[in-house]
Image (cartoon, rainbow, N blue to C red; front, side):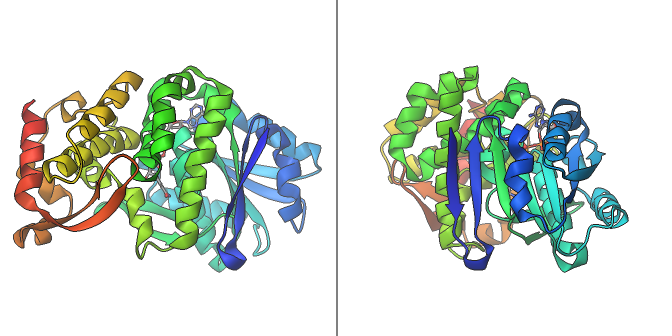
Length: 369
Ligand SMILES: NC(=O)c1ccc[n+]([C@@H]2O[C@H](COP(=O)([O-])OP(=O)(O)OC[C@H]3O[C@@H](n4cnc5c(N)ncnc54)[C@H](O)[C@@H]3O)[C@@H](O)[C@H]2O)c1
């Protein structure tokens, strides 16, 4: 079964195709985009060992020749040095203005290669072939591309929409459980921010997703992509509604900075903890009932994903420092903070006037408990 989700952005519209066996059919899926039967593939070393041969064979089967570059795996790759390496390699491969670049990998490869495609010859087209759950449900859709710098994460980048996204559910079978669960943090986020029925379904079928049920994975990825595509189509450059996708992210960013973007905390794990904290904060502000944060936490715990700050190994700084790391210190001076909060499961909204002392209290309790 192949599901298709449209991202409607006028001349920059594209389709996200989600299904099984898509990598093996990638040549046929991509061929209509090509002016000449040649592509450049960029991936990471881990993904290359598992899935590059299948992609190359699929391209060859359609008469498409390809060259490939494998970069080191991991968040550290999303930097200036690899942006230069990737972009110069694409130039050496004589990628021209009308050619198409393929990004095969997780969010790191998608973000880096997408940015490289955005600046190469002032913009060449690219196709996302996301291989992590996080990349399939989130980073491959919406056109945010970029790298990290010494000053922080994703501070340099561009909006550059892909021409096509091919999310093959089967490639998730080689993904380590921890990376799968990290991606699940973003899946849950969609239910929490705007679709209570989806969250109900995840409470029931989430464990089957973790165990590898293809039908459940297909449905979870498709619903997540539908929600992201809808939001991006209405607000491509985050003037308003797209900010809802940041549910849990303000807490997450502080925790990621505090843990040095290391293996102590994966991005989706931080999102899961951040969502639980955002619901706790919402409840303490009287926006939703006390049962809602309990329900969020219970589901995350049942799935085996990190849910409490205390689940992060090693020491963490205090609440005040964490608030500083949210990059919101200027706003703290005025005593108000900007957060995505919720009036209930599936009912997130942007709050610009969150009292700093309430945030501090939530963090103090989370660090103590
Ligand atoms: N652009 C966006 O809108 C957006 C949204 C969310 C996150 N992101 C970015 O995404 C990045 C995180 O993405 P990620 O979690 O996919 O990390 P990742 O790309 O580092 O992948 C995680 C690990 O899984 C390995 N891997 C990937 N696919 C595999 C497979 N099928 N089998 C076995 N191993 C596989 C990778 O080699 C890597 O070691 C962050 O840099 C984050 O900033 C971007």
